[in-house]
Image 1 (cartoon, rainbow, N blue to C red):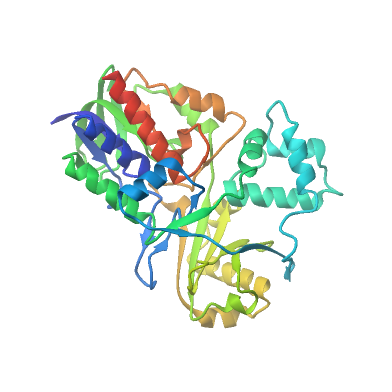
Image 2: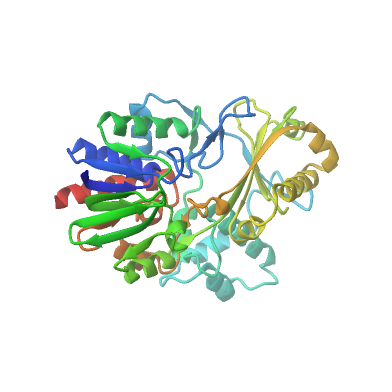
Length: 419
């Protein structure tokens, strides 16, 4: 059967694109490499008393499309609460949420007119010595929050993003997986064909004609194709294009795509409440630096987070080594023996997204070259190949589920208009 449109990847972008195309009356085939929908959205149920998020967990602010789908699906939002507490060298700095020079840094950043990397910006205005602590804070924030490399990350984009850190945050009760199930159900009710366990490794294309070849030896034909696989998959040349699309592949490599390791630790009791009742996030100087609770919900789950270049390096370690690093980090943060914490540990899961062959990383970040690269990738190739996903989104909320949803929606509408 020949389709109107093939969609590659059943993550948030692929699902909402498929839904919009189906609504418009297109015959759509959705191909997903793994055995389930969601991509980096993954909810773990085994071993945990409540669903635990292996990937995206938070809604960062009042995001229009995400909240619209939440309402459509009849899902419930849970506000996130709790203080953000820095811990340096084992000392809890409850009254020092930011570095003393943070305001000076942001003020200088607002004066920047021509973009440069964060590394160049720091070297220009905040040299080591007096600003050593600030530089460590900026590096930790860029790597931990944006998964970015300082020598590639856009300073102007950091200014835009870091100015909006006080927005409310939410979780979806039961996890983002419920949103994915809702979108998948809508695609299936529109009679779009959905195939799992079909990783695409080659795409042949001409004007208004594409053929996708999967690892199982099957091929699927359509007039157009939307590629929504994670950016890391394209950057690693996991899909071959014939004829080659060198300009677009060069553009994908100009975008930033960082690594992340997420650690889900279920303890016998929430011992962190021995230190403070209102802990939301802990930002430390340990090897696994960032931890958060499920506040305001009562829970014995503590989530660890390591992002950026260090996460890429540590993705090569075994689970046992990562577990020990995490326990040592918590031991230093809470001034408790690591052995005691291990005895308190009921269950754990460590997710190194870099090692997933169909993901190959965490999410994207803006580089100095991202604006021009995204402009190039926004243009379809020979009216046949379109790209969608959080990495290609140009609005606010970069690197989020909202970005993926908006990109998938916008790309589907652009394709429909071309028909």
